[in-house]
Amino acid sequence: MAINSFIRASLSVDAACSGNPGRMEYRGVNTDTGEEIFHVGPFEQGTNNIGEFLALVHGLALLKKQNLSLPVYSDSVSAMAWVRNRKAKTTLVKNEVNQPIFELVERAEKWLKTNTYTTPVLKWETQLWGEIPADFGRKK
Image (cartoon, rainbow, N blue to C red; front, side):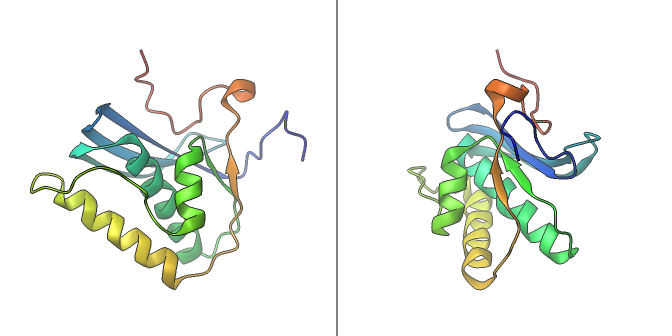
């Protein structure tokens, strides 16, 4: 596949975070149509990297559960590395407010360690293609 084009039959995932840490949410959309497939959050005191990681694992688990062989696009190099390593390498400190986020992270890491998948995880090339379709459109 040429880098100047992307696979339309795919899932795109992204996260948004207002502040760092801040209010974080994530979602997955049909790359071709923009239809929202899942949306989770918002959660207080999260980070964008954690949201990107959770979105990617959520997408992988959903596609496996539905037995779909679509690729997943992410624009986050960090999240892709965390998925490859099956571990969220966050420096965020767990507290009472963000406990629900850490529960999701632990669940995602467990899923990665106990499941296999053949889903291609592909880098969304923002410079060539514009914002990823799952983008929340809040950049300033």
